[in-house]
Structures are given as structure tokens and as C-alpha cells.
Length: 290
Image 1 (tube, rainbow, N blue to C red):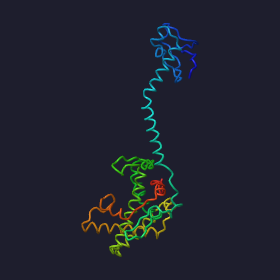
Image 2 (tube, one colour):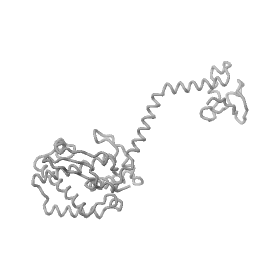
Image 3 (tube, helix red, strand yellow):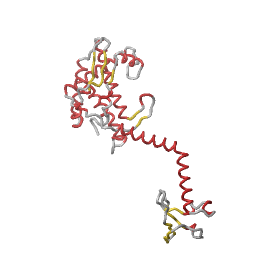
């Protein structure tokens, strides 16, 4: 902006032209050429101007000072802008729309190879029960965090150690995959060991599945498309895995859950491969709620 400001504003009076060195000077305000705001003239009328330089000289000196300050702190300013932009992009990523769940139910999310050589795929339909559970349990915490806007909970960033850092929505998605894979692995291990549910355990699983089925919200039913039979099957598989894990624990095996050395070694033997394009489209906190 190179035009010379043509207005000088005196208290109660407006005049044109440059400001002289009269005794009125200290009480005068003028328009800052950079911000358009009224400023007291003596902030620009420094020593150089008092030695007889013009107002234009004072304005040019002020501009040079401003440019000098910007050049001096430019790396810091640019770094702060970059951090702010990155934060905005990350938060938008956490709140991205995700995929339309019901349109991808048969897409394979996880592939694993059972140690005997058989292939086992988990589709989005196989993960649906776990999506529902994670969102149901998370929504309780979300309501406690902010009942007026529970979506805030899923966009919180948890700064923890290792793979436990991230947005709550992303951590929820990781939990869905981790526990669906865990139950599939232990289901295979249970069958290999000749372990099965008792009649009483099967009845409880059916009752639990029926309760879940009736508790579904219209949005959950529409998004997940889980039939009663599919839900019963999912709960039975989860129950078998849980009971087999308890059996192992009762017989002295301690490191059997996700994250433990024993389980991670077992998981590695199944050559688990995740379809990241599908999995990253699961926006936990927004499939069956919000």
C-alpha cells in the first residue's frame, strides 16, 4: 500500500495535508495506513521526522521496520502457520465422512491364513457386531463428556504411548479390528483344541444376541443390516473365543489378550493382513450413532 494517507484527525477536528511540528501534534490521532485504525501520530513521528524529515519519510521508515520484523520472525511465523494448518487437516481427517457402511458389507476388511493353511476372510459384515459394541460403549462416555454434543468425544485426541495415541474415532476403529481378529483367531484355536460351548452357554449367547437385536436403533439397523441370525452367530463366536481364553487363563496362560507378547506371537502365525482402504473408511462414532 503506497498511497500517502491524506487525512489527519485531530480531536474534534479533521484537516487535510501533512502534520507539522506544532504543539497540537501530541494530541492528534491519524489513520494507520496498514490497519485503517486511528493511532496517535507521535508513534510514527520518531527522531528522524523530528529532525525535519517529512511525514512520508516517517511512514516509509515504519514500513521498513514492519518488513524487518516479519523477515526476522518469518521462520517462526511460518512454522506456527504450518502447525495450525496441519491441526485443521488432521481434525478434518478425524471427522471425514467415511464410507457408506451398508454399501460395503461384503467387502473384505481382513484376511488371515490359519496355520493349517486355510484362508479366513472377515468382511465388513463380520465386523458389524464389533462396530455396534464399540460405538454403544463409547457413546456412554461421549454422553458423559458432553451430552449436548457427544460428537466432540470422538474427535478428541488421546496422547498416550505407542499405538494408543490418536483420535478417539481412530482408536475405536482399531479396537473393532483388533477384537474381531482376536475372536476369530481364538475361535479357530478353540475348534482345533476340540473346545466348544456348553448348551447353557449357547442359550445365554442367543438371549444376549436377541437383547442386542431389540436394542438396535433405527440408524444402527439401517447401517449394519444385521439379521437376528447373523447377530446370534457373531455373539456365539465371541462367546466361544472368550470362554476359550478363560480356559487358557485357568490353565496358567497369562498373556492371551490383545497387546500381550503371547497373543501377538499367535496373531503373527495367522499372517493377518488388513485392507486399509476399507478399514480406514469405518468412521467409528458415526456409523450407528450421531
